[in-house]
Image (cartoon, rainbow, N blue to C red; front, side, top):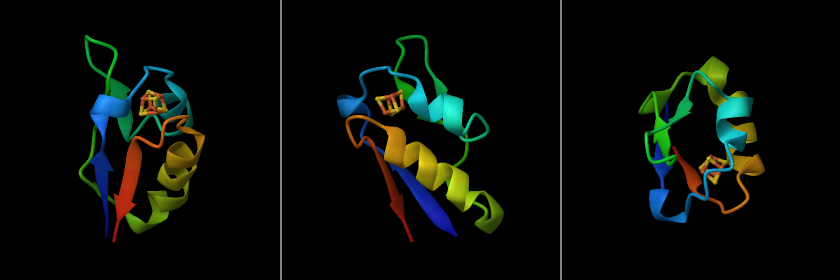
Length: 64
Ligand code: SF4
């Protein structure tokens, strides 16, 4: 399983990750990214990887 680590201090609220993987990411009231899941199922990894790639500030790290 892949673990999602967020560097929220980098988040600039672009929303790209939410557009690409809405099952895994959302924004809080302050507009900062939050993860809806801690661990990514194997079948959803590609979508979460795509979300990490479209983040303009590399705030989404995938471990494992
Ligand atoms: S794509 Fe990156 S900067 Fe944009 S909301 Fe997601 S984590 Fe924040």
